Length: 361
Image (tube, rainbow, N blue to C red; front, side, top):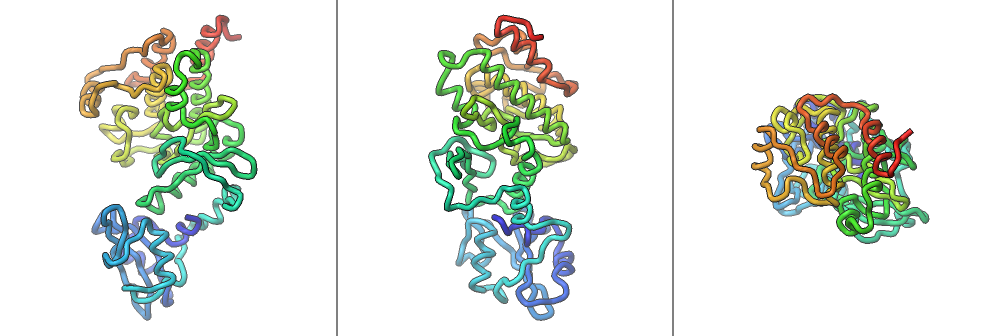
């Protein structure tokens, strides 16, 4: 995926693609999203004095131009037609870089994210992210998490997540965010250990770590949009860190809600497409419920349709068994319709002191 952004131009028209592929040069190419057929892609290739547009079709989770050869993703398709022109006019020779962007390779290299694969050892699965399974691994003696990309992932979507991850990388080396943790995700950590091994003070510590991570995200004007216990990874020294930025965007309104997890998403985001740090606060309240229920799925025994209808009418979940009153009160404040985002860490610290049997200083 290191070369994707060199040739993927996102949503541009056919006319704009022709303009981009000037002056004419055989084999100069780009890939764009189809304007006429949303969800499909178009391979645009310069040949002679013309630009030829090839529609890329979805077939059973794969991509194809002629239905004779199918590909797992756009990168595989480009690599194939760089070696064998097949049904297209010429081999793909030179990618047309999207204006105003660096290549993915340059971006990731600058951020220190490119790895030498010969030093990487893969282990078992530890979670499932927006774009594929997350595996445990080891790189140069350090335990890491490795994302295994799903076959049908779009080129731009994964790079969007990578861009967010590199943007917050200053907080990932021992700070509140990262994706390199051997204990797996928080849901599985809690489910496999339960109340006997994980006490209330530890639960609140996890919650506090997440609040610190989200506080940092808010300071960068980023909205996570998929905050849930499954997207929190636990380090060897029991630090919970925010992960999986597949839906993270700069704070703005009117974003596509088609992929949103209903049970974790604020009503205004589901109904009106309004996403902000306030909607992340709502999700944090649901995450608190998950944590203090030791990994149970929220809104138990309710369908998504029932959740949508009930929440809109004012329904809020009852506290999990054994949940401290102040923690449930904090959940309730997160689920207020006009909740003003603030330093949740400050609200959690006094509760942590009470759980430890003393007052915080």
